[in-house]
Length: 371
Ligand code: SF4
Ligand code: SF4
Image (tube, rainbow, N blue to C red; front, side, top):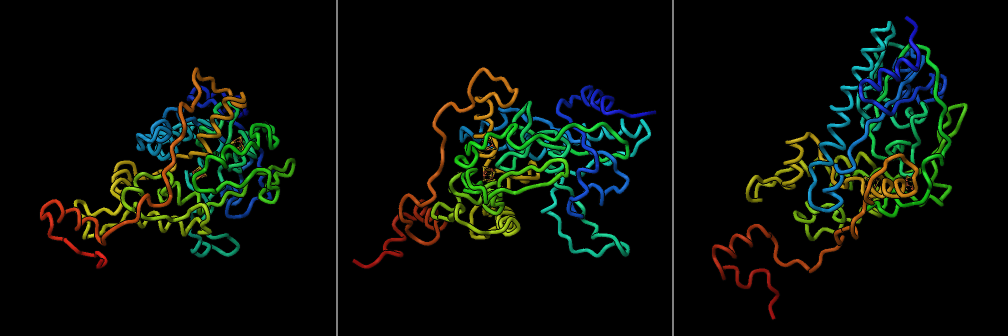
């Protein structure tokens, strides 16, 4: 049976996928080997990209500063790793029912891969090929990589997660969007980012370019170490949980030069850490321990600038089709102070709080400077 782009799009619609685009494989011939669909599946002739939206309301709790789990669950981890792959899987099965091989891309990112293994045979690359899903989706014409590096779609703006399928079917490609079709380079994402990770869009030296042959696109060179530190809760300005456990810390994420991997090591180690002298569960970061146990992930910044600020400006400017009765921002936005509000006293707050409650007065003159 001959398979056409229209047949795939009709099936996608039936499956509830309303953002889909198709690129021909030639657009990716210059992709780095370890991020290339051609290295992954040498017979691939077309790439299919889909976007699934998350509800605007899934970010509401973080925006109000009142509830965190929803973002991690609905907007991030489960949408990327569960809800969206179910649809990608069903679309891949449809393509295979038509007689063409369909490789659904595992929801991973290339920068997470430890490429330390030898190739399985001479002439092969290390067995760690993972494609850059946003770059490939842009090459399919699904939308545009915004200045913030977040993927923007005509229908939902930045409120999406992406999936890819590589196939050996030759399909009619969609056009690649010009940079600036959706992104206004307004800088709202940079102003809203609590990590200072997104550069100023007026800085032409901060542009990263990707060349698809028929078209070149560009977006901002985001400092991913700062983003990861904030996303994974190491930024006092956007984490009430870090503020609670380390109220006297003033780690200046906005000026950090840590790499993304260093940021991951620090944030995941702390999130899983136990400290025997801490009362209760001994978890250093109680909330991070809890949310990881429940959802397998923890997202703390909640994309304050790159999604929430961007969503607001795109909706107001009519740059996406989302049509809400009310504006997203209801009131002044919250941000926690980086620096401690008062100088700390004492040494071990858990010991001191316990003794002060159970043995009032017993700590008299401890750690006090003589008059
Ligand atoms: S807020 Fe959105 S539209 Fe504005 S520059 Fe950032 S990515 Fe582009
Ligand atoms: S997730 Fe947060 S820290 Fe990272 S770019 Fe978006 S707004 Fe900035």
